Amino acid sequence: MAEDVFFAESVETPMPEQCYRLGFFTSAPARARHHRMSEITLYHNPKCSTSRKVLEMLRERGHEPRIIEYLKTPPDRATLQAIVAATGEPVRALVREKAEPYQTLGLADRKWTDDELIDFMLQEPVLINRPILVTDRGARLCRPVERMDEVLPR
Image (cartoon, rainbow, N blue to C red; front, side):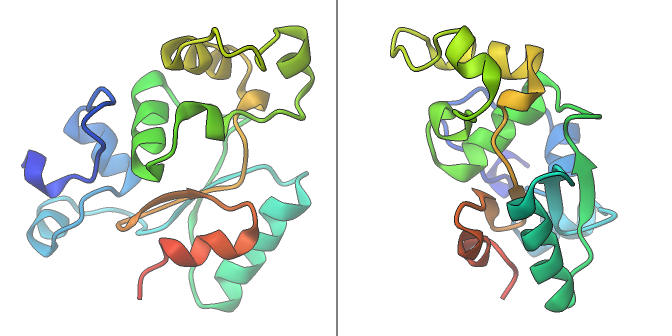
């Protein structure tokens, strides 16, 4: 089953149930074995204009994503690691620099490891940049909003 999952090998691979929740099963047989409620998941902050714009664009294109307001329901460690892996970007790319704790904690300092950055993001979910779109094709931080096209179903 591991060959059905889209993950970078350098990040700890989450268990299949996290893969299921995130919609990371990429092959048709895997999708058939793992029924999902939605093929598209949006990690969303309704107060963010970019996040609202992505949601609006998805709906205009006929997609109704599963919406996770991550400030109310933060991801667990395995889920956050899976999202990072699916983006193909370093952890630092998903850390929100404009969030107040970023400066207070000195997160601009390159001394912080990926695991430490994830710890900070789990302790302070406001540090998770948004919106993040997760589909069968991977995950993207949708900044700019056009990046969502990179992972939307064709």
